[in-house]
Length: 442
Image (cartoon, rainbow, N blue to C red; front, side, top):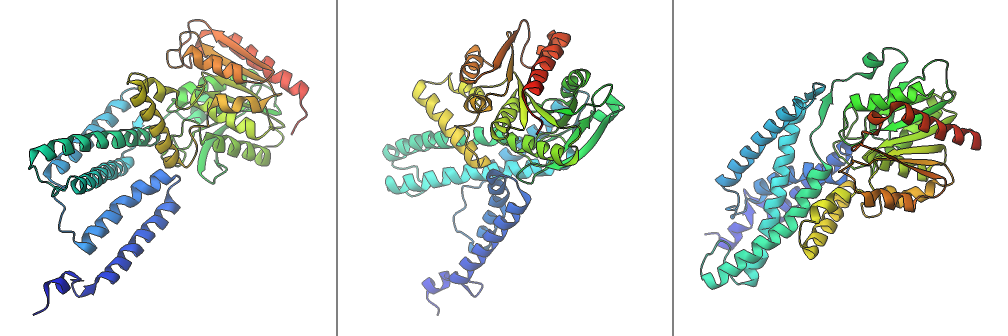
């Protein structure tokens, strides 16, 4: 009779080494395929984890998978149902929003991968603590060891899973279709174009010609995160009336552009610089002078791009955040200081890893000084509850010269245009014209 130990080393007559080799080949193939399809490390990780886990279960048939129980399946389907409700509710927020049902399967797959990550984190913590407390996994006796082990397990799970979940859902979410078509709204002088970010990601934009006679100056307009195209077109009209061509685009991960990541403008500089490259190559006559205009998180993208390329002759930053972690800091401020500080830094660290960038050194405050001596105008509403007064003062203090700060009474976040259309247009035009007089065309 074959020894029991030898039986354990064979699975359908296939040796452990061959099984390990097969598993590694499947894992490497999954990573290679995901790297081609995805635009960020976080996307790769969440796409890969499910086929790798399934291949592990099929190839090795681990004896212990008690952690995956009926409650996990029920929880997952409940979460998927809530997501469907969320999609339908969001589609009712605006008549221009449409649910992209082709994204639904991808969303469910993504939620499954997130659930699997959290389960693996808990599984790892439980395994380590069981060894430390010398308890069999799943044992509830003796209680003098089980109770402290469980308390430590829950504490560590929250400490690790909370920043992971916050960073993941902060940088990845479902895409909606914005049915607003600039070509139909503006009727004439608008053309859809396809271009690439500097990292090769495919993006979609619209070149909007200036009103009246032709212009040799174009404004790259970077909207805020999830900003409706209708709101962006209001800025485009204002700039068009001021005598400028406008290049409006959907940021990566939104609208018609590729990707599924929201970088809060951290990676948006690649989109703005891609738009600049397109304008200089495809429309040089209408883009002898190029200016940047960013709204909310789009302001961070414009600031970073202008800091890297001096062909952007001047910038307007409306409702800019000092740092991309400003909103997260508000959330962390409700926690005790040590806990809040850990949560804030751990979340930014994981978000940086998922996007493949550095959230700690990104943001308007960190980049704005490098735009000088090109002119900058900061626009902030005095009733803006999203951005604190400290944020705008930090940006203004960090900026070089010449920089102007326009505080708009009774304006909320991104609402300054609504409170003074003509004054807004005149101030922007004055800024851009001063830049034209002081700079040679590039």
